[in-house]
Length: 347
Image 1: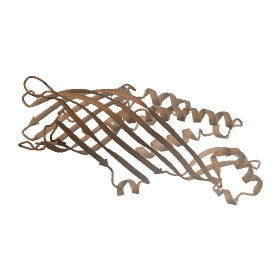
Image 2: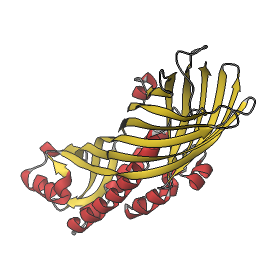
Image 3: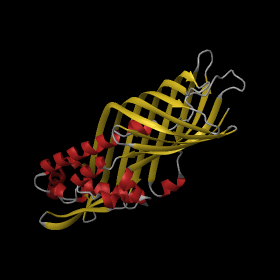
Image 4: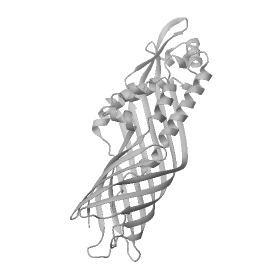
């Protein structure tokens, strides 16, 4: 399974097979921590853009709820935002991980090499027209239930994308004028994946004067993030027969954290740690240093990030009676790109 291969490569790289057991472990630890900080910052820096997926409707303003007919709509959005490859290749190289090899098994790897690593998402969404003053509000929700197929492969997955917005109509699109709205939105995403892999060899080394094989039994890889964003945005659109082009821009403040952990039970020539004699056990402890705890090899990291980003977006909507199909694209100031497709019923 591709996800298991991806996790195994990353785990081997982070344990820097052999390098972790070098004499200058402090220097190696600093190198790993610096690379992980750069990798984490690059990923979490793209999450503000990812959070905006969903509710990217072509209408800058859908109208009043208590009109005839009332203005509301429901639909589904699928899309993806990218992590620029330039924020991945450098840190992965510092971890002695071949990013080309890691990404080679992903579908459409050639496209990924040009635009970045995509983070896919889907949401169900609804938008309701306002009353009294010209505004509308939207809500979105996407989540992933427990999948038996993934559990059979030793993979646990958690996903949530939720948000909402409020838009005030500066122009309602009457006459030759476009619709123009200004609004504010809140978005939150949560993602977690846990992968249990096959036993793997960490290194061949000398313990108690004998060459031994250090193995990691039942290694587990856990990775995830939490990200929240508040965005101010403006959008313009204009109906032209059944078509509706739209453009817009947004500025967001994002706070996020990304972290991961790697763990497994150490065996020495298939012998559990608690079966080693005291001298050999002490030698293994010194060898693994801070990565070792009572028979387990542990490694973890947590990278926080916050700051402002801006994005520009646009696209084209197609409307036939109450059926709508929108295609939208966007790019933000950190180089992340996004593409989304929305289909809905709208009155």
